[in-house]
Image 1 (cartoon, rainbow, N blue to C red):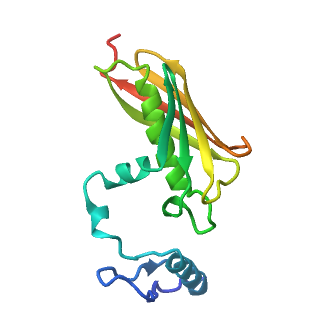
Image 2: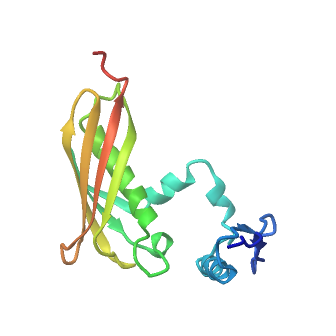
Length: 183
């Protein structure tokens, strides 16, 4: 079968500084067009407020949805308020927003057991999306250290709907402690 030539489809309402993507010759142009239309519906290329370009904006933005309820050695409990800025097209907490919240809370939990003279960095993180948290819901995040040693710290995090206590998300994060202990 002969390969089709590469196609460039125009973007409706494209941001002026962006060019149309190149479409692989192996894909049907109709499918490519439908995919690009979906991105447009989801707001691809919409302008963001100038304040969002400030250094550290995203971290501050994510932290604004978290309220710390309890801190213990090896454990942190927080409440997350689900609001439209961190929701997806379907009106539930966006998966990327959830992962960002999980990272912030997991780092804070790991810090309750890792000495202040050691730096930590996220080496691995997994997320289980069991159900969705609708906009306006409150979610309880319960993070706890399951292992902490010289070189690494492991944090598990469970997210439950505050109203029903239904488990909706789980996270597992592995942090590496730096400097690594000499063997």
